[in-house]
Amino acid sequence: MKNTIILLITILLIGCTKAVYKPKWIHQTAPENFVTRFETSKGNFDVQIHRDASPKAVDRFYQLVQHHFFDKTVFYRVVPNFVAQFGIIDSTKTALWKENKIPDEPVRESNLKGAISYARSGKETRHDHLFINLKNNQRLDTVMASGVKGYPPFGTVIKGMSVVESLYSGYGNETMAKVDSLNYTQLLQTFPKLDLINKVYILESN
Image (cartoon, rainbow, N blue to C red; front, side, top):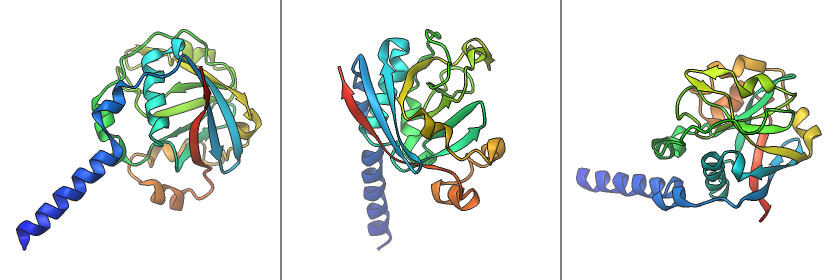
């Protein structure tokens, strides 16, 4: 009986792993340009992505979008007149992805209002958390973050910036102390006014 239970648990874990990560996914190359639509609790907005701005980061973003990793996520940090940050809260979904690090790349575009960039905390730490600039934040182009210079933008909001600006910002930085220790449901129970990302998908590409 005990062996049967262990076998069932193993099968379930393998099944879950296959559902959240497959090695072939990280070899998918993004189109040179594509538009991504975000359907949120405040409405929709579209982001134009430019692969040449940060190719490795864009490939990972494309892979995550294609496999629906940003569906049912949350804008967990919105700081007025600074950034709106979002990402995948469930660490079980991202553990294997994080083993395949995104190489650091130079800043080729500027963190102007509407630009989207990966958050990071040091070398090769761009994973699945991103931010949209709510104002011109050019200082983020050159600021040092644990030995890495700047946050490379790779796309810009081209439609619906008013939606991004309307995201709930009352919690400010308060959520940052909790985001690593709470799952999606717990985070929303603790901070019920956070806005949701219902769905993210490729609208068009070339």
